[in-house]
Image (cartoon, rainbow, N blue to C red):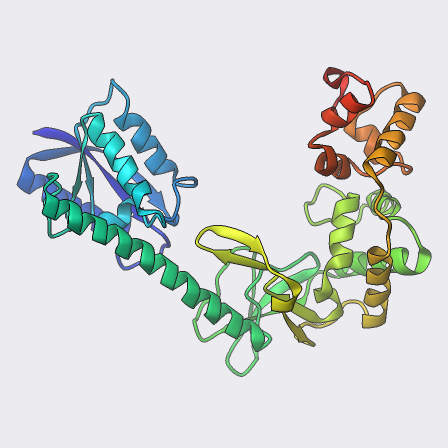
Amino acid sequence: MTPAVQYVRASTGLQSCSLEQQGLANSAYAALRGFQIIDTYSDEAISGLTLRARRGLQRLLSDALSPSRRFSAILIYDVSRWGRFQDVDEGAHYEFLCRQAGVCVHYCAEPFENEGSPEANLIKQVKRAMAAEFSRAQSERIALARRHVASKGFIVSPAPFALRRLAVDPQGRPVALLERGERKASAAHRVVFTPGPADEVATVRSIFRLYAVTGLSRRAIAAELNRAGAPSPSGRGWNPSQVRGVLRQEAYAGTYVYGRARHQLGAVRKAPPAHWLRIDGAIPAIVSRPLFDQAKQLLDGRRWRTDAELLDDLRGLLAREGKVSKALIDAWPYIACFDTYKRRFGGLGEACRRIGWPARQVRT
């Protein structure tokens, strides 16, 4: 019998065409055509839009192009399982690489033989276009549905620090708190935000008070929180960037903002503020609106330091300490945070090179 492998894929665990069903169809095809399936490559709960996250297909292609491979055929349920690439030539390219290496691709549930005839090639190309169009249309439908749900004050986003997701029934009565990544039990349920643990809520209130009332810098606030052992989003302490993220989170003032980014066909793009959806009063407020607005005004009015000023600060740190490291930058309150140097210069090593300090001596 001809040695073959099979590839199975499902975008979610809820699809009707499960991995098991695909495997059964592939096995039946193999029994009729004289193939022996010696291995299975799979991608479970992964979109077919790109190759990037599909470790199973990546491994399959690598093995298929290897001179030491042990198979000469690949069995796949249908064209869409191979991929829903928006550029239909991408799927054809991967199949061509396999065929050029001497490995034939067989679509077990398709009504054509993949033998290279003009008719088969035409049908296959149409199937690829149909698979891509299905994903595009599905993406638009999901985006519209999510925006409609958000417009009613229900949540379709992960919970920020100090807030938790709460499933409610159609009458708005609480059903269950949802852990990170957990789905609601019924499609009839909706999700809202509710205040989280008391120590996290107190930490958020402290950040706004220290910044807007006391006037501490973000770095000083992070240091104060770490000294007090306050809970943090990562569980590994606070840094100035995390403090800034809290100060920018309008959900703490009771307003749910949806649509800051557009997630479409595997790509994420920032959306202009005019396209954002704002629902006031959708969330129990942790801080007052006047306090949030005061903090926002201070953030917006802050003057960004120029590249030259950042480099001068780095020279001052080098003159004071005799060396440069991420730990020193984070510990010294008179210099921008490490993330700022990484964002402006592409890395601390490049910033140090510009001030004449050898990059190889930088400890990150």
